[in-house]
Length: 251
Image (cartoon, rainbow, N blue to C red; front, side, top):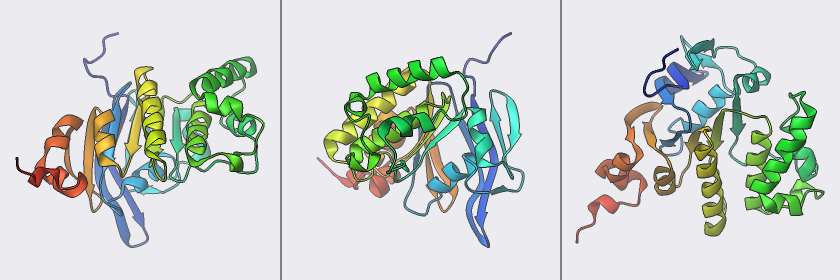
């Protein structure tokens, strides 16, 4: 079997999301390849989180929206959230969403609740604790006792316990100190290096475009710019709107 030079692992076509009469996403097309980090850039209300919620089944797509994983198409309309992980998709939501009253270990095992390969689950647990050693040190503690950065690491590790191929990450740096932001983004790059495909929503546009290979700029639920991340980072419109007006500086 032959494969195209740049296989499209995840392909979204004609994604439309509406909340009553308000249309949040207008016919979006998006691609994500194996081992690729793709950043979604835009102001609050641009539709970034609505894309994530639609892909994870938490928001209802409408119209003729279709998502294709490795060439196999699935209708997004009406897909229950519980079925989404079976497609190899995991969502790390804004605000982390860890179970605060459960221990770190229990949170991690919740990420593998749909799996039946118990011996492999244990091996995966060890692998994630090696990847995030702070979690090993706090394994028996309630998640509520973790710092914001540690909770973010827990949310990522829990998602990985489901063995996804596609990771949806919504604002992973939100509320974190700069040192922890660097650690979280280093872990994101490490996952991509292992072959995981990551769709990244991040208000820190500078950091997002630094780690991503490609990006989409959203305004009002529509893609207004797309291309290589390095190219977008040099675009004057992107600089002025999302990178602190760097594009207007002169020597």
